[in-house]
Length: 410
Image (cartoon, rainbow, N blue to C red):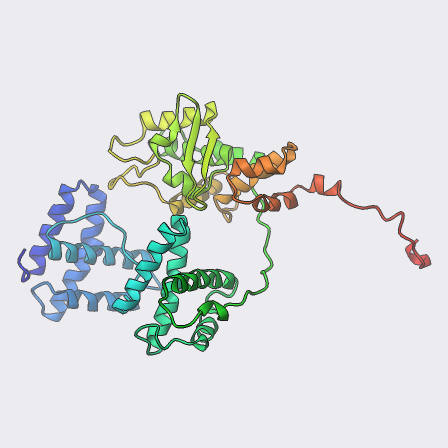
């Protein structure tokens, strides 16, 4: 594809390609008026006719300063439109993918390769789950970026003082979760030590901090969960999908990321089971497929799910037909909580916590609850004990055998 092309011509070709990808008409209109047209106006104001990545980037910076904190949705659409233009300009085609966070600056090649090797190490050697790998990579990026900003081009001159200074700088951002930073850096340190990539052991500067006080988040009661499910209109395609997804969360306690990642071949209809590998822990889990949940999922698949070649159960109803994200599930829950007249301030995890609490109320042993919820460690199920006030009252110790010397206390 020619590298010198008029912006108007590039926009026309990009829009034509979007039509070939069967983007919805509404999406096309939004891209045109909210995304491409502002870029076109900027080029005209600058007297620029031919497309230039540098000119587009200048416009993005200007738009971010003007809209970034006031109208994020509008800026996001401008970013997407600019990314589409640049992708078609560079490759002559378009593929669906998510944009990286705005303002992301790549590291030096040495540090980028180090981060990539660290990711491979976590995947192959440590066999961490994908979510854990992503979390560790983000913290590692912060650390390597700090080193780069302080004049390091590799690890040859890094000292324990550099590690300590990084912790002081990052602490305000992770005030309530410094243990996450320390855990990620320890893992990174073990990687460096094992591969002999650093002259010092950075883990020596990573002492633990006191565990923060955790606010106990109550789960949905049985009545609250049923109230949410009851307001869903199952006569529409969206209602069938949302009903099946939320009912699955309510009746199984699955995490929202596992619902998002649930695949068609993980449902064993013959044996009435759901078999999957949990994203968070990497632990296999087998759950019974109750008739109510199975019927809801079957109704959605047969009568509402778009007929596309996607391995995932729950997908978007509009193009592009990709799986719904965990964030989308949280948005869906808030929508129906408001419809049910409830304050939408909680998360999808409330289904999981409520499911565990209800099992505890039925006097199901804690090890069994932990197994059903797919915990790695039984200690993960212990917070559910604190939500059952009735059984906690049975543990209260009487004061009759304690001697009282003050008359006023008798």
